[in-house]
Image 1: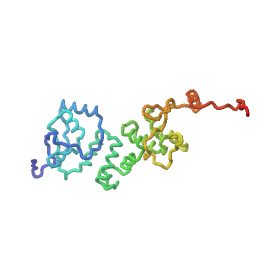
Image 2: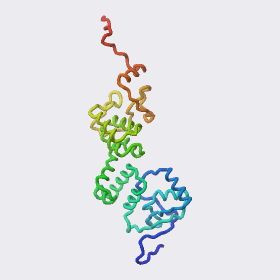
Image 3: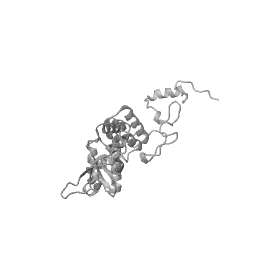
Image 4: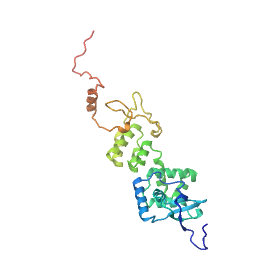
Length: 283
């Protein structure tokens, strides 16, 4: 049992077996860079843990408040016991401490940050955004911007989560309400490393144009939220006419006359009689 002397600081320094320390109940990050985590683990093996974890007691165990990555690295190299700063649950807001530490270290993934805010909003704030802003110490505009990311098209959210696009590019893509054109813009943005300004220009050029057909005889319903559309092939291969394995496809730009020539070479279209061609004989 830990005893505190009168007037002493509430913080207690202890070395705790790593098996008694649990991960945060609500972690801000869902994924971590494996290479950076491995490098941190090797560093801890060589020189030890320089900065202690911050934990709180939970029954006979402890829960990390700050230092989630360091805990995982300690587990990798079986570093134990772990130096910790122990805080009483009533003496600190663990949510505020977690966010403060993470924002002074590795930048959190915008999607993971948004999902974290969404969980806190539902589980701890009664869906009150103002209460959430007070808890996470962020302005309302910042919090709402993150939450709106989750309402965007699923493919855009996933690309942002994988850091294939920036948050600014994601905002511009989500302004496109045509699901098939949006996916083509997304693929182009990823392949070309486009900026938000470039995506905005591409999107404006296509505004007012009808969306690309999903399949023969099918037209997308403009009243349907793109994020609610079921997963389906959004384009077919020009050569094999197969719409599966779209992740293996590459975007190729062709002038319309050139595309017609290619289709003619593949036997996909019949040559139309020219205006100067003689008319077929009448029976």
